[in-house]
Structures are given as structure tokens and as C-alpha cells.
Image (cartoon, rainbow, N blue to C red):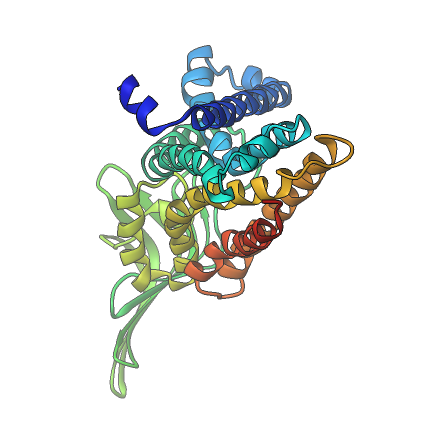
Length: 367
């Protein structure tokens, strides 16, 4: 293996790959240590008040927290790592001899692409398989210990549970599994055939049925109507669950790819308004790792020129571009979920725009 690497990877390749991956891992370690320290100081009171065990904090919460933020910050850390060691090489006049020794600029870029491919492969498999599992651990801990302050229950929920049946629920209390102001309407085409209204509806988690109490039903058959008032009680099976009325932050990010596809098929009928959110999460997992290539090209083009001031100027520009990338990605999510823009298009916007910028700067880079 060593002989194979020495045959196909020259000294300059091994040098740049080692610098690249070494700087990347070191920078990532610094970021995650700082993130964990700040998070512990912020949530220490929550951990103590909820009597969370040390095992759960380390192997459930932080086992999800660390991969989540490593994955989220990896493109930006990658970008800063490339700028740091490439600008240092340019400042120490190490790039000029490489390009002067009959090596083309494309040949100079080869070790960068090899290193970014390694990062891409790790990031891809993490996004598709590892991160959903660790997000699930983190979300379970936060929800069980009340770490999040947001009210997870949804209000005024409209939902289609089959081709002919529509339901509405004013609000839902997850502590006693009770919904309030429930309406269910059944249609035959565009014609209303049955309307049921109940002030409360309770879910029996043992029998897995919904219990209706003191409800009213109106049956419609052409011009004839039948009305039943104050029916004492009825247990019924409905294709809806308490989880349909409860939503937590990052709930889709904690789903496996199989669960995402299953929910997409289900929500096409029940709640089409959340489809863009689901599709965005699905496409994001496959396209987000491509930032390893995009930001590598941009980082090399930006920092391969020797400038006055050393590493400071390229690093400052790189930090500004990092913030621009984050803002652009957040806007892309809003455009998809709130603006109705196709998710596949919006998820590609950050990489496409920064890729064009990197290509332009690459053409202008000294060769």
C-alpha cells in the first residue's frame, strides 16, 4: 500500500494532502471544543434541574450534539483550513517553485481534490446514515428533559386521512393525549356525506383507538339529512396519531432516508404543505457534501496569491464569505419552505453561486 501511494502520489501531493487534512482536523477540533464548552455553560442548569445522568448527557445528548455541529460546520471549517495553509504556503513562497517547476496549476490542484474527495466521502455517508441517527439521540434527550423552550404542539391542524375523509383539530394537549374541537368530514366526490363534531377526542395508547365523547353526527343523503346529537361515547380507529399534532425542531433531520421517503409518500395525501420541507431535507443530505469541492476551489483561488499582510487578508475575506454562505443557505431554506420554490433548486443555490465565484477566481489566480 505504501509503495502504491509513493508511486502515484508524489512528494508535493503527500505534503499538500497532509497539510490539508491536518489543518482541517485541527480546526474542527478547536471548533467543537469551543462549542461544547459554551453549550455546557449554557445548559448546565437544565442538566442539574432535570437530574439528567452523566451517561445520558455524554452518550445521548453530546453523542448527537457533536456530530450535528461537526456536519453543519464542516464546509466552513474546510474552507478556513484551505485558506489557512494555502495562504501560509503562498506567504512563504512555496507555491511559486511548484508552478515554476513545469507543474501546471491544474496539477497543483490535484492533491486538493484528492483531500476534498476524502472529506466528501466521509461527509456523504455521515449525512445519509450517521447524522439522522445521532440527531435522533439528541432530540430524544432534549424532548425528554425539556431542553427546548418551544411549545411543540400544533394548533388549528387541517389534515386529510384518506381519499374521502378530512379532519380538523383546534389544539392538542400532549400531557393527557386529548384534542379539542374536533371535526371530521366525509365526502363522496365534492358532496358532503357525513360531518362529525366533538368538543374533545382522546387517544388510548393501549388500545390505539380514538375515543369520542358527547359528539354530534350529521348524515347527508341528497335532500335527506339525519342528525344524531350528544352521542355518549364511541371508540374508532383513525389513520392519525398524536405525533401528527406534535412537532419538534429538527424532527425531519432525525429521520432516516427510509423514514423520509415513507413520510413523503404519506404527506402527499395528508399534508402537502410540508412536502417542501421533507424534500429539502432529503436533497440537502446528498448535495450538501458537494461543498467540499466548491469551497476547496474557492479557498485555493482566494489564497494562492502572495499578498502583503500575510495570512490575515485572505483569512478575513474567507470569514466574510463563510458568513455569506451561511446566510445564503438559510435564505434557500426559507425560499423552499415559505416561498414555494422547488427544493431541488433551492438546495443547490449556495453551492452553485459559490462554485461560479470559485471558478471565476480560479481563472484569475496566478499560474
